[in-house]
Image: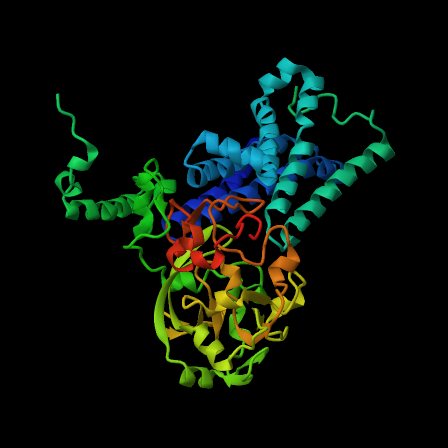
Length: 210
Length: 314
């Protein structure tokens, strides 16, 4: 199948969680505490998509499917999209867009601060996720900026972990998945060396065909 | 030039009530036809508050507050004995066998006694009480309980002079309460009150809600309800009530002593270490409400805590 079609299909699939929430909202399906449901669901999808983004490189190497690299930026953008929704729903329904209150909340509650920094790190990545920015920055700088996904994903899991009241099993699953993805990279760097080129010579770092 | 003060205009002068009420219908219809941004849909009656986004936040207690629906009261529960998700209790509480059931009253009392549920019903006349319930997680409900003042039962047991606290125990049976297989809390669930708190007329043992017997997920067959304290104090499915001379440890306090204190009185100015307690969301509503000291029952119960530092004794 044409790569463009696959990308389009993935684009639509990534919209399904949002579509689901919209439909649930329309048909009173968000449960007794709809706000909490919306905040939780968008947060979890953001985290899932961050992990999906981070698993592209291992999958590409393990199964030698370099084409999926071309989906990575879309997954990253969706992770940011759901993270932003997560924040905006909180800002709207929990804070009524009172920025002073939001700022106070961020500064006084570690779990909110952690979540905010995680989202904040995604902003420069999201902004520079176009071919133009890749070219403008050059591969080296572009990759430096996009290294931010590691602290961002770590903080996102920590945010979830700190938020739960007592039962940490769900965030634990994400922590383990993230740990595997991190360990894979460390192991790869250790065994195969940092200097081994990540890309085919005819692709730039975002997987764009030159 | 005269400028109308807001107060001068009666709301009836602005919009006819029928049109005002019809608004909701309009929105629902429009939403179903897809004319309204889905996120802004107002599915339930309370959703009108949505439009009041920038008006002052209402307090949690208003005279015309509506009861939380039976559906929501029975499908949004924290009852970790059946799982830690709030939808778990409605799914799994059916495993609990509430009959036969015994409640032991023991410890520092002149007349210890073991009640069957029927005994409880026969001995203590049931009455209906509508209380606000404020969860420590910053959501709230308005619940029409049925039950009786715990004071009646305690008086009959006749506490000894050295009895100062009351300890409550939930059933411990992982067969019937599968959540007890997971060590999220120290099982069985335990709670406690000072004797004067337990004797307060607002403190009830509830055996029903909405005029029906208590659904399992809400703590059948008998549970405590202390309306001015965070919900987790209102222990469910009680099998033992023990009077003691020292402050008991409670399950949540054992789990996280810096987050959940023995008193756990609802207090908007003492935040949970991880979130604010200043506001709450009434289940079934979209907008926030201001949380009130002692959950709005300050007139009745504030005297229990005169001279006490509520921040320290959280």
